[in-house]
Length: 120
Image (cartoon, rainbow, N blue to C red):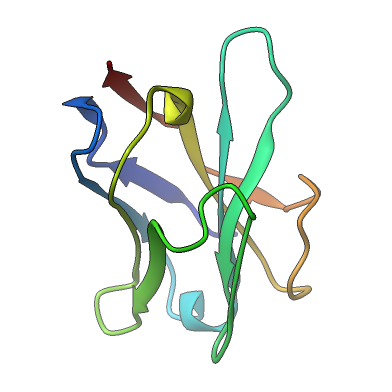
């Protein structure tokens, strides 16, 4: 069982940047594919980015603006978000699974979420 804790959310102006962190428990966290999803009020949860041991994947809406990375020594996955837009406003969730890349929400483990608000 892995536990995930997100942090780094907040309020930022359009065009600004934030870095989200997801800290995972357990000695095997580096074996997990870790993804970021987001959910805006009244909308479905949507895929943002994912990282496996050696590869990354992004939603088209964030390509070129967001970067996902991981530090396996610190058991942490980061989401660097640049050039933020008001439409990026959502609760951002970290998710992990051993089964590899997927863009649907069928991940076994989830964090509690962190709010990102981008003002215009």
